[in-house]
Image (cartoon, rainbow over all chains, first blue to last red; front, top):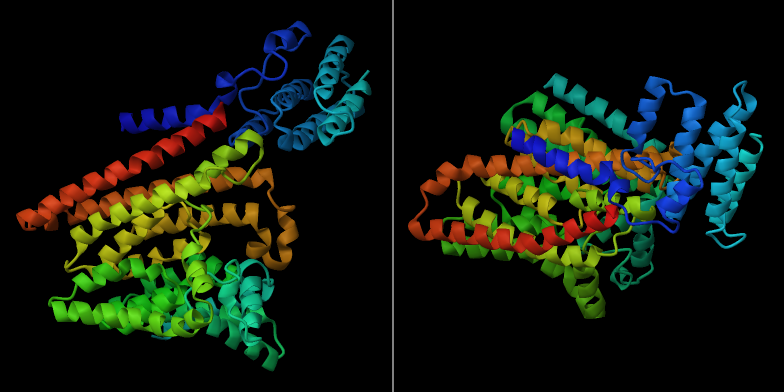
Length: 148
Length: 404
């Protein structure tokens, strides 16, 4: 039984923490951290276990600002590692929470919002102007600008 | 008997409801197109994409097209009638053979059978019913007819042949089981031999279910690509592994008292090892497992239903949901990928567990084998294990690429 558990844990480890074994993205983590980015999420929009993370957030009832930060980290991961087919979902997820904060009573601190804008501009500029990923990131950027 | 009839009526109502809700899409659309080809005097084998089966099924297709026109009804209503009729027939055969209404109902209301025959409209249940006829009546013609509909029962042919005691009977079984396909193929071979042979033998499946689906799910994580670039390589490796594995199973199960268990083991080996598993292949084991009252069919049915739901919701919601396909929100929805992945992972692990269990149950029989046969068993299992190495190595490479 112990052997079975060990094999299962080793197997699932491969895709539970993919970002820990990832090669560097277009922009290095150090450079991003220099701009105010903290860390990538362990589970991102492309992960097979992403649904479990979303369920967990619903159960724990995470506040919108923490949730926005999580969605932001996921968006940066997807954009920086050019997982463009997941960008629409990552961007929509981020925009939805940002929209909730815009409509709500608890605004995001301005310095944090400016950090988001700076990083999102950097991410957007990784792609050709007018391309679908560029447009998706531009939408997220414009939504973030409304947070100020 | 009354309860059995009531069960059959209720199952027909459920199946009718699914069929009524269905659409003429996917394979059913291909069936209609190839029926029109035949009715127009064109060899359906000229379009291998439309018709990769042995010849008999095309006459069902053409007949269904004529009936649909005659009764002014949809083609898919008539086309789905045949596999569902076969399902009812299998349930009756199960009752006749093992005298258990419960097992009979288990098949009749099994979601795998309902999905494949009523929603998808694939006709594997017809091949399975003819295979069961062949087992019960030890008649090679039934197996021959099954093979002339769809090639998959051919993998059981060595078990049937070696279940015969004397060489004349073995030869007779081989000839009669090959006769229907051989005879039916003649006109098509005369017309277009190259295209006909190519159409029948070129189809290798797509890796929609089983470990193929698990690998495709891993690959999906890179950038939402649902086709594995290494599919051709995996298909080739898995064909060799299945061939090597089946030799082990033929040697281990041939001539045994339990032909059904042997057939079940070969189908399970196929599902466990072969890469190109399509949705309808999951139906093959059901009637055999029910006939042998193997309780592993219960967890298998549960995980197979999950795997099938994940597959259809992700790749073809219109096949599963029919007119209500829009409820899925479109094709290739990321939200269904976890169901597809976990459903197939559980399915593959269940199949492996089941296969090992059947082999373990057969071990006391192996002890009674002659020394030469025992050596053959050991040699064949070694060859099988070696044949798995390139397949395993490719699978590990895919997983590593998917997460790096």
